[in-house]
Amino acid sequence: MQKTDKYPSIQIKIHWITFVLVMCTYLWVWLAKYVLVSFPGVDHFFWLLHFFFGALVFVFTCIRFVVQKLLQKYIPDVVPPIAGWQYWTATVVKIFLILVYWIIPVAGYLYRCKKGATLDLYVKTFTARCEVDMSSAQMWHAIHVNTAYLALALIAVHSGFVLFNHYARKNNMLLRMMPRRKSK
Ligand code: HEM
Ligand code: HEM
Image (cartoon, rainbow, N blue to C red):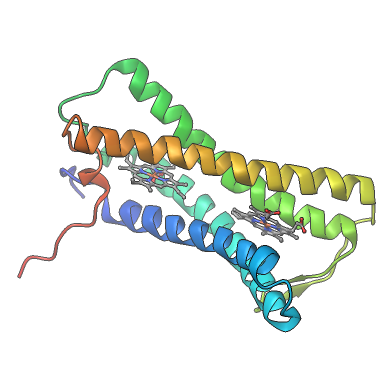
């Protein structure tokens, strides 16, 4: 494998698949909680989608972390380069994006578990094995919801910075993360 002008294609795929999964997870919960509340059977279906996609986000975030570490040396440089402090700030934001997408699904699961609720992931239904404790359930609920909204702010900062570099500074930051066009 050689260093090219793009991120390794596996990283590009994982990045954009995770992005779609994350967006869908928010969409399902908003549909279930705010739009479809008066349609009990339908809202239940979207709750299950929320749990399932949320669990997939956790799995993909683990995979991306490992792949990122293994392929670090193949990541192309930004040309023309950005200031050191901007590079480090953007890196810290990316590290937080990994951390929050671990914390959010785990907190969602612990909230359900501490409440004594089962977790239906379509392929398998997990029965709660935690000791039911409503005050701890409330704590995980607060962590889940607050971190999920904080994560949206991180996404805005991350993608805003990338788009600023693409359109204002006209460097290759975004293009490195875009899929390679198939040559005819
Ligand atoms: C990255 C993955 C996830 C994201 C981004 C996410 C996001 C959210 C958001 C934004 C809400 C709050 C909706 C609102 O009140 O405005 C919520 C609620 C909820 N989420 Fe998640 N979630 C994820 C994964 C999970 C998982 C894996 C589970 C369960 C195993 C879960 C269980 C719940 C539950 C039970 C609620 C309802 C809380 C309530 O009734 O107030 N979530 N989620
Ligand atoms: C759910 C939303 C997002 C998350 C969680 C996320 C997370 C990440 C992470 C962790 C990286 C480091 C490389 C890797 O592990 O893949 C990264 C890189 C990158 N992301 Fe995102 N991202 C999101 C959305 C976006 C969006 C909407 C854009 C475009 C506007 C974008 C553009 C990029 C680019 C260009 C890079 C490479 C930047 C660099 O190397 O400095 N991302 N992203």
